[in-house]
Image (cartoon, rainbow, N blue to C red; front, top):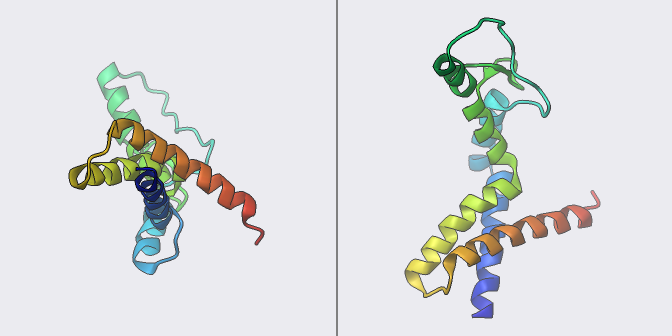
Length: 138
């Protein structure tokens, strides 16, 4: 059982790294294009228009209207900017990758408390990422 958990943790780490940072062209090209189009520099607030609207219009504009200046020069909205951030964040992406890997593993083998394994695999991925960053001297 310990070997199964170790293999699950390493699988989640590897798949997460593949999605968020690897230079494989069929993953890097769409990732960079998406992040350039929809990503927002950290700390950039939304643009203000000064008009008073009802709560429904304000909420819709907050989530779906182009209120944030994007990296590529265009405008982004909260949903797309969050997806762009997710695509580059190891900690964030590992939660989703871990959910898929643990779900698949639970389908084929019996994992006790899969929700705990899911969270542990995600946390281990984040820790392995930090260790890799510390060891990277390039």
